[in-house]
Image (cartoon, rainbow, N blue to C red; front, side):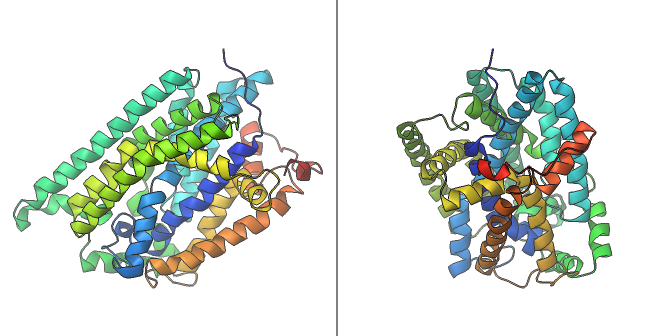
Length: 412
């Protein structure tokens, strides 16, 4: 029998807010450059000097870890919602699947109408699978999560093996590798040119391209990334039940786990970065050292990130309250970030797609962070929820929820 978790936790909001800000460090490349540049700096945007340094910092500290942290938090939130429904005498399954159904619709709209890098639809599908596992004890959540992460690594190891095998074939027989090159390698100039043309074109052309290329991407993502995402959600449930994400761990325990996890993970990431650089970001090196092997140490570093964030937190402090407010409105802020970025980079906005090198993207990231931190706390001083959180809650509960709350400022 588990104890229900309080519905509003500063620790959870703070970690979520940090993940929300951190994930833009990676997503900005997806907004601003051709697809392959996300994993492979040689594909576009520069891979020497300051551009290589920007890639290296992200690979060592943020790549995959902010997404993983978000997945941890999604699993933790699943427990909070279902525990709260049970405590209120409601059907937790109905509450959960109503939320996931509407999240899936939001995600599909985001995917097709705003940005092809949507994660919401993926979370909705994986969240539907995760629900029956929520009552497992902490040890079993961790064990099953580890098995799922290993399964995910095995899938990407097979892709890396295919890339190695196909690279040894004659050029006339390498057509099979085209999809891998488009996502992880160095695409030919004509493919890069086609992506640039679409993103620098009008809105109708972009939407048509998304429906043509990404209509089935939630299912493809589920088969490829769903194992890892589900594992991370289970880790998040375990982290909440164990007290970590509930803010119950003492500082000495947080410090100990942060040091241990990063001492394990950071040297491994450094070696993997050197491998990719030494190989000139070949397709095999990126798939093996950039995608497959990091999965084996990434969970440890995600745990370390959670511990570090809570160690640095200063309840009532200026930055802590604003980051927590941004995290409390993560759904609204995630979609707002997409809208701001596509208006900056796509052709129906300012049209900066493909115009900036990698390092030049990060002043833009800083400006978006300022916007998110500037508006989230004032909004929550007047309203109970972010605008999209309120809409999601109202749709899932099939009635308009109260949004104005004069007491909201006291929770900041």
